[in-house]
Image (cartoon, rainbow, N blue to C red; front, side, top):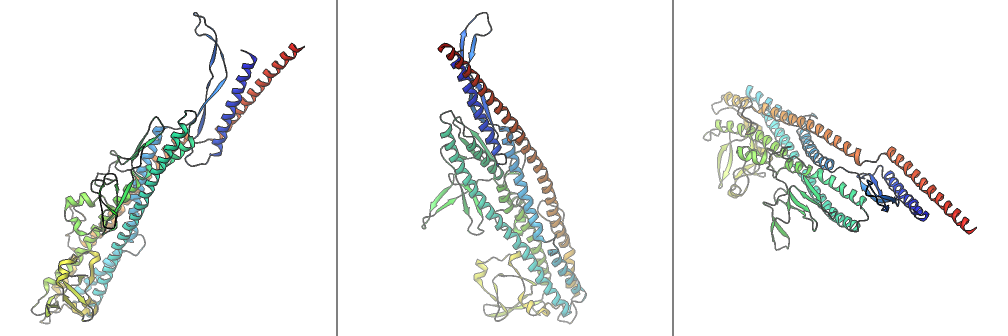
Length: 559
C-alpha cells in the first residue's frame, strides 16, 4: 500500500472517531431526557484491495483501506416495548377503576364521618320511638324531621355519584381529543422520518424517539397494536381498528347524548350521518363505537387495557336507578361492569324500598271513609281523601302540590308526560306533613292508639326482603343492605388496590428491563468517550508518522 493510501486510512480513523465522540456527547446531553433512546455507533471495514490470489490459500492477500462509519442505531428491544405498552395500559385500566371506587367511598362518607348510615339509623330510631308512643306529637315531628334528613342525605349521595359521572365524562372527552392529537403527530412524524431516511444515509433517531414516546402514551390510554413498514412508516391500530395508516388518520368522534350529556367515542369513518338544518352532522354511532363495553373483562383476552376504557366503563351510559336491577339479563349486560351505575342502581333500590314500604304500610291502614291516615286532595275541582304518604314524588301520579293553598291538585298532563317512579332524586317528604306533622297521628277514629301500624313501621326495617343485585340470592333487611353495599365497595376497592400494586410492579420491572437496554449510562458513555478519544489520538499519531515518512522520502529524493 502506498503512503498516500495510508493517509486515507488514518483520515478514516479520525473521521469515524470524531463521529463516535459526537454520538457519545449526544447521549450524555440527553441523559435525563424523557423517551430518549441510547444511540450506538456502528463501524465497519472499508473496501479491501486484493494484492494476490493463491488457490492453495484460505483467502486472498488483501490490504484494508481503513474503517467506515456505517450508521448510528437506536438500542431498543421491540418485544420489551410491546410488553411495556400493553402492561402500562393494563395498569392504567386498574388504576382508573381503583380511583373510581375510592371516589365512591368518599361520596358515601364512611371514611369521613358524615355518613348516609347516620341518616338511616336516625329515621329507624325515630320510627322505633313512634312504635312506643304512636300519638306523641313530638315523636311525630321527629319522624318527619328525620325523614327529611334521610331524603336530603340520600339525594346528596346520589347527586355525588352523578357529579362524578360528569367528571369522568369530561376526562373521557379530554382523552379522546388527546388520542386524536397523538394520531396526527404520529402521521406527521412518519412523513418526516421517511423524508430523512429516504436516501439510506441517515437515521432519524430523535424523530423516532418522539414517535416511540407517543406510542408509550397512547398505549396507556387504549389497547394498541402497530408495525413499521420498509419505508419507516408506523401504522397503528387502536382497539382493533385502523387509527394511523401510511396515507391518513382515522379520527375518533364524540357523540353527546341529548339527555345525559355523556360522550360516546366512535369511528367517524364507520358511522352514518345526516346533516341537519343547522348544517351540523348528526352521527348514528351504533356499530361504530371505539370501545366494546359489553366484552367480559379478562387479562387473557386483553380486554382490561386502557385507562380511557376504564373511565367509560366506570361512568356507564346513563343515570341508573332501581329499575335497572329488575331484569337480571339486562343488569349483567349493561350495568354490572360499571362501578358508578352499579352503585347508583343498588343505592336507589334501597331508597325506593324504604320509602315505598313505609308508604305502603300507611296506605294499608288508611280509611278513606273516616279520613283516618288520609289527606285532602282536589280532583276535577272536588275535594276527596287519599291515603297519606310520608314520601311523595316531586310529580306524583298527576297530583301537584299547590304551595299557595297547601293542597294537592290533580293534573292529568303530569300523568301522561312526567316521571312517576319513586327514585332517589324524585322524592320529597310530604309537604303537608312538614307543615303539620300531627297529620301522621296514629289515633283511630274510635280514640284508640294504632300500635299495630306503628309496629309494622318499625318491623319494616328488620324484614329480610331485598337482594343487593340480581346476582346475589341472599335477602337482607334495610340496615344490613346498606352495610352489604358498603362492604361491597370496600372489598372491591381492596381487590383493585392489590391488582394495581401487582400491575405497577410488572410495569416497573418491564420499564427497568427496557431502560437497561435503551437507557443512557453515564459511566458507560464516559468509558466510550475515553475509548473514542484514544482512537482519535491514535489515528492522529498514525497520520503524523505517515506524514513524517513522506517528508523524509521527499527530502531524500530532493537531495
